[in-house]
Length: 255
Image 1 (cartoon, rainbow, N blue to C red):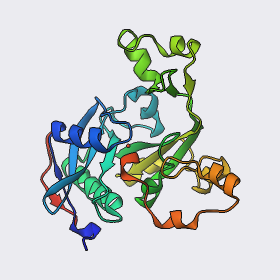
Image 2: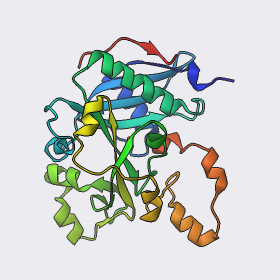
Image 3: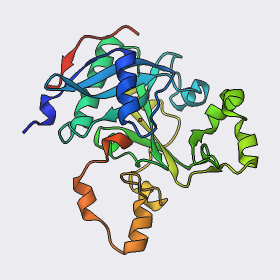
């Protein structure tokens, strides 16, 4: 039986990464700002992809770490792994990705990512991979249109003509934010960057305290309130992979 040590992480084309993300990721979409695409292989087959790039609104998140150069950080825009990959492949692949970034892009000081606690999960993989929790907020930006389509307010505001109106206009037509939370995580590649963090690092227990827990697209807070018990089995299973978030460096195996 294969283990996480058997996977390989290597650069892939934007086209190949997009195909994997569109097929596996719960959003079914890629991030237009992605510029670094890493594939996750098992027995020579592409079974996952990680896309890194700039956040859509870079000016808002750059001040999270003081004195960060404009090109000094990346966002993990998308992470999509198939169910064919062994247990713990996500944390293994992230560890390899961070080694590659540190080696080939030493100017990158930290990596930002968000867990979608309104549709997917509260960041189990990020916590297992050494990320720090730096923010939890109630979702106000992911909207459900009257048609049932899920879209971000930023997408509506950037492409109002294509989308049939901006976020404000759609809200007047009945679009509503999805219930849930958005959780912000940061991984520090440079130790000094952590010292320059301008927001508090939150304990992971804060997630449950705020009622922001979600697993496999289901709020565990709601589940516990309904059933009256904690699903201990969930602690031993990873989130569904389909529901996960420059010049190419050389291939590196997960060894």
